[in-house]
Length: 221
Ligand SMILES: Nc1nc2c(ncn2[C@@H]2O[C@H](COP(=O)(O)OP(=O)(O)OP(=O)(O)O)[C@@H](O)[C@H]2O)c(=O)[nH]1
Ligand SMILES: [Mg+2]
Image 1 (cartoon, rainbow, N blue to C red):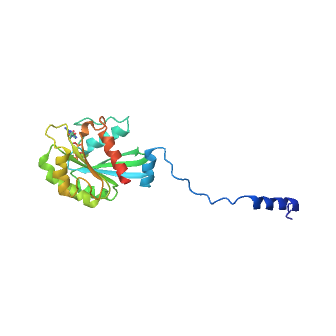
Image 2 (image 1 turned 90 degrees about the horizontal axis):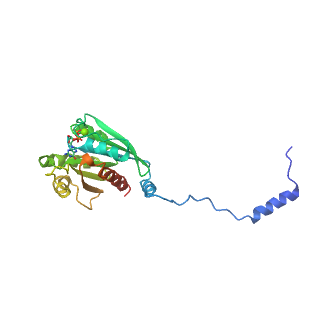
Image 3 (image 1 turned 90 degrees about the vertical axis):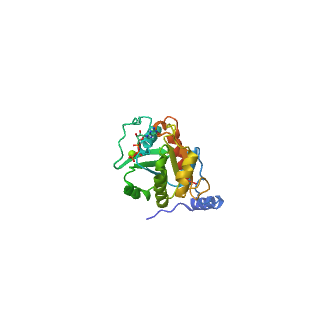
């Protein structure tokens, strides 16, 4: 048998319910970010980003990746010059950037067919140019054009090997490599920039970290 509360208790409960203000439906809390990193993550609306590094053989992709590792992982000592063999497959590094899980791949420059397998996965592109090898600029530009056609998202073009006295500066790489590939200096449909650096010291001078952080921030725009 179900026992009912006494009548007086039932009346008091009904009166309390009448007096109680109707509570509004719970609303999701407004986004509050104590750090720019959280804001960028919110804008990107996901937890992962994938960055693909391509460029002609010998341009310095793996050296740059070594210094990206060094920049985001203090325990990693980048391999010294001469210790990195030509890449016969791909190299991969995973790290956190702005609270996002970021995977960076570097694919061998002599394996152009293999680049295509990674294009669809890439959220952002790094195109590495040996700025000291002007004779290779037309080939670099053709390779960049292919990569641009097959990807979307932000692009960083590295004008690498700036420690070489004869290296082309960013403006020359822009004119000779990027523009013919259809990548304008500014105001194009995708965020893009040319960064001058020497991959050999890119963890020490902050340029490796700056390039990756710019790309991840640009994914959100
Ligand atoms: N002087 C100078 N040499 C560099 C720089 N970056 C890379 N190199 C050298 O260029 C050569 C090729 O570098 P890698 O990093 O192996 O080039 P890669 O683009 O990965 O080449 P693949 O794997 O064959 O596609 C190596 O001897 C590096 O030490 C740089 O900033 N300055
Ligand atoms: Mg390599």
